[in-house]
Image (tube, rainbow, N blue to C red; front, side, top):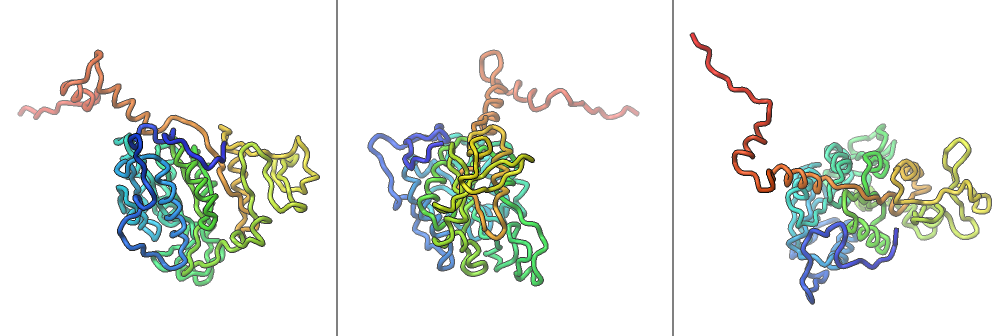
Length: 366
């Protein structure tokens, strides 16, 4: 997959969405609403908002053809701050509402903004089915590993032993790995980035927008009030290069700095491990293939993430093409509405609705 920051004016993922006219152009200011941004000072959401506002003009779409749907949580204020259509919807149900929009309105570019609590707790069921169905939506999952809006309870991504208001003796829950979950649901585009790396964040978001189908991007996002420093180990410039595993399509999977670089290899038992670069062989080295149809290797890469952030894979884990749910649904509707080469009338529609399993109930005679 190309990592070029450039982007074609008409993206594959939004090819049915009307583009701006010749000579028309929008700027970041055009996508910035007049609402006061009300997140806590230092919140990572600010960086994500700025990145999204910055690259939306590059899509070449009219603002009225872009929709952001959110659930409940700090991140779910996002639609207020964008001058596009949007909806602050129901807790955990944003993917369901977005599915309805994508299926009924092919002229819209549909986005979901959600958090680790909203998406992975009450919304877990809705998330995995939107992914497995391959609905043509782009999901931004802000992960700060805590419930921020409700004031600091442990979330589905909080580490074991996390002491919070709802777990004063430490959480005993095993946390979700959102990337593993998405790959298990066979999402066709799965990626991870973080709020403080503006270049990488923008690059990944653009690739997600370009993809036709269900795209999910996990964004590590700092909560300075209730979980400050959760990602400090990979944000600290002196440590991050030794911890981050940058996934580059078509290249070996490596981590570490020059002189101490390690390469991912497959052991004889099939497991993966990092060894010194000079110890890796061509036969055992694991290369990254984001376009592999089988998601098992991408899943194995997602499991390299350690709870202490000692090693964290970053980038696009998977990007494959598959028919989208909304395209298939529309094709069925078109087929059902056409009989004998022409549009179906009321009688044909009634027959379709009634089907074969109907009965006429008559009153019994005395």
